Length: 329
Ligand code: NAD
Ligand code: DAU
Image (cartoon, rainbow, N blue to C red; front, side, top):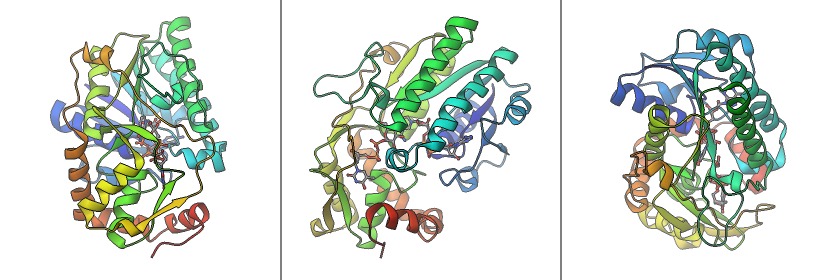
């Protein structure tokens, strides 16, 4: 299969590309704007993959890159909730305009399209799990613009018959995740003896999925998903943030005294939980439990200092100071 993978230089996108090339023998072109989160280094071991540096909102670049492909898989997005609260502009631009430009390109060329989305579009749930027919009640500028993009994708199926599938994932973790997100941030801070900033009471619950499992779920909907349908792809385990941090302390040899309770995120969603029965019925299931995946992830960050050192010593420090009001050691 020949694929155009948008946002393929980011965390999940690069894991997906690696899986498609190595396990399925696909021919892949990546189109990525290389924002702070997108890095050439994430694809360094995949020399056969062509990287087109452009935004999904650039219609000419998208049309050119999509020539001759069988399908487009879109990961391109601004993905950090805290950044969406501080500066929502890029979220609106990429999720609304960018998704529209991509949809026009796939409509014109008659291509299959997989849109990567998130459980955050459903909002927070106290008990039970969201199904694909749960109402969309997003709470942050990140999730609201992602929900808007999902609705636009559905409209292209209903109006033009575009062969589009939407895949909503739960919280991913694993290799190549930018250390603004909870797990890699806590691993690197724990290894460096820095503080471990827990928002609010730390009892917010996330439904963790190992990135290779999510990548496989997306691949599964690419080949088996029914056009016009939404598929939830959730992880096998749920865990409150404080317990995640404590497990990381154990795995890294950090210390409980590094935990610091900091001001909560405005509008913080309390719990996410996905029912994935629909994609399981297509034959997918997660392979990696949280305890094992977290251990693998800690090992990867320990062994790949050359990947994260340039991030931790660059612009990230300014972001960190601005956001947490203190510097890294
Ligand atoms: P990431 O921030 O690591 O990567 C995003 C990638 O998109 C980067 O390579 C970036 O350069 C690129 N990008 C951003 N704006 C672009 C634009 N306008 N044009 C082209 N490229 C652009 O994010 P991620 O965690 O890998 O998330 C990928 C997708 O999966 C997103 O759509 C996200 O909403 C979704 N998702 C993420 C999670 C998670 O836990 N990380 C869970 C469920 C769904
Ligand atoms: O649920 C899927 C979503 O998961 C994706 O769509 C998003 O792109 C991804 O960023 C992620 O969103 P979260 O907001 O859940 O992830 P984050 O890693 O930012 O935070 C996870 C939890 O940890 C959340 O409850 C906030 C908390 N947290 C986070 C950070 C960065 C802290 O307590 N301290 C922190 O420093």
